[in-house]
Image (cartoon, rainbow, N blue to C red; front, side, top):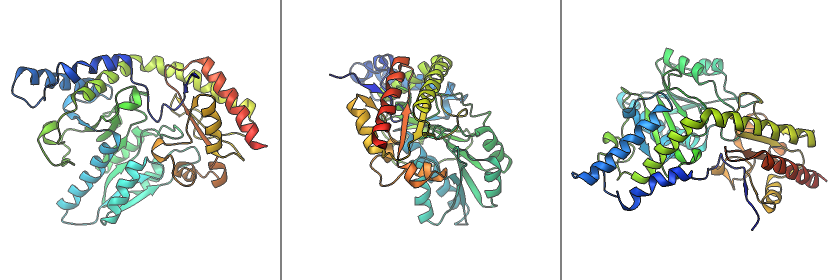
Length: 384
């Protein structure tokens, strides 16, 4: 069987062996429901509390500000919909305005569109050609009835890292709640919720070598956020449903490993990323790097190739054992080019030839060289 070279780590990551080992006891031996009133239940409860501490430490939060969910999409929906609806209810139906950006993940965009259908007003901020949202553009969009600002920490397609601290300062100055979707950034780059004045933050474990189907929403103490799912009193009455103990334990372990290895991974992946960008540019002078050269995630490489269709390019790469994508995994199969690239002002036809290559700490320089060589040959073949 041909060796697989996995360069789609923005879509999901391989489960770390230490994460799997940490989870295993809670499937069979320590399987008790943490809501129980017996010793085995307390073992599960203690494991959850330990994971809460591990998750909080990475962003400078308190453990009691971490609420476990099924992942990033649930966290985004909960933060945006529940908060907005609760504020409108308090305001007796008065107008409520939300600000987000045109390049958010669909979990944020579709949550906002749902609220628009309910009568909320939403402003979708433009971005520049590098995928950045400018603080002055945000400042100009604020109204008297603005209740929420939701801006992602880093873009999932082109890797652009947003100026969270500047955005947080504006939000705090105007006493507006600030939410960030940090699914791509958490554990990969430093984020401190206090320094950036973040009120809510979404995270998903499977983006940093944790298990799928588990994440969390950070909610700053003092912020009232109604539960999104009705039922029991789990997660301090904020999120109903029997606790996914193995998943939560795995999330915590993944956070611990990410914290320990963050700087090492940043350094190694930045070297790999820069080499990959350099080689593709050398071999394909017409290739268009999308996103910023400097202020981008250390593992993200994204290009558009003139005269090439993404589907054909991905098929060739797949035949060589290379896993890559054209953009967001949640938009695979969608008709037309990425909404992110279009928002960045990239020509519609050029955007149809996009390629995203995203690395992990397990990738090697030899793999980078092979991928670059294969991409160059494939693009030249398709451009004939």
